Amino acid sequence: MSLADQADSQIPIAETIARARETIQRWKKAGEAIAFVPTMGNLHEGHLALVRAANASGMRTIVSIFVNPLQFGKNEDLDTYPRTFDEDILKLADYKVDLVFAPTVSEIYPEGKEASTTVYVPVLSDMLEGEHRPGFFTGVATVVCKLFNIIEPDAAYFGEKDYQQLLVIRRMVQDLALPIAIHSVATVREPDGLAMSSRNAYLKESLRARATEIYSCLQYVVKSVQEGMDSHYAVGHACQQLESAGFDTDYVVVRNQSDLAVPTKGDKSLIVLAAARLGNTRLIDNIPFELMQSH
Image (cartoon, rainbow, N blue to C red; front, side, top):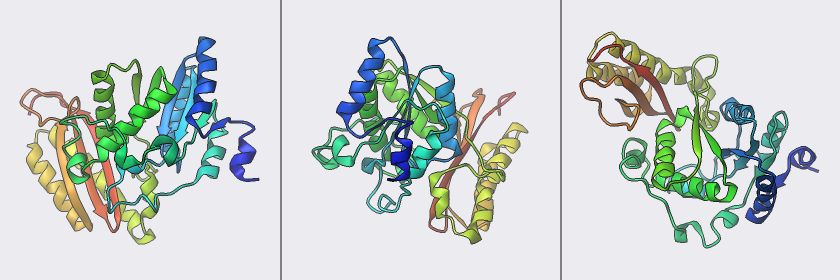
């Protein structure tokens, strides 16, 4: 018996849409609401913070574990992405999780992912991460939309570490008039500041200490811009810092929190976002911040 089998006595696990819906419909008939946390597994403290937020809602909590092939590019890490299902179930057993939905790829894409209907959120999907990972957000929006249709949650929880993804999902929910409240949870960090991510496991030990430089650079940009420095100068210096630390930088940008547009005079709710590769590991991070006066 696997660890997951042992934990199954505590947490029901549905591997098919039919079984998940059977359970969910029973709850809905009883007038119970549902809080949903979609994940790709390999759960860490960042995921568990989402589960805690869902628990705090007082609703039934459902967690999905599904490594979505539609959001991986041709040369990305679909085959090597960490899959730790048994350990994930044990971690969830410490929380009030009423159902784990863990479908196979064929259950979600019965005709194959290439033949699947997709969901595309314009503009937001094409900038920053979308520019460097073409098709990524279409893969995300498609699977999240399908999961929403299966689970029919009243609320869903996403981490702010993947900030652009959060905005894409919010826009999709708005545009498609889905009756779901989208809640965000602040980025959870390691003690040294590195944002928690399943891909941190790829970092070689020799590079792990340097990985925190991405957070340090973001902190520098926030402090500098808040003190009046032009954001272009602050970003330029941050990029130099990252390059000096051995990063290959995709972008460091300051944008509006609401829509990731380039800020104009008078905008005060901003966010600095960065993506950079250290060795073979691509890291992303961000810090939202406020301006007390226009710059």
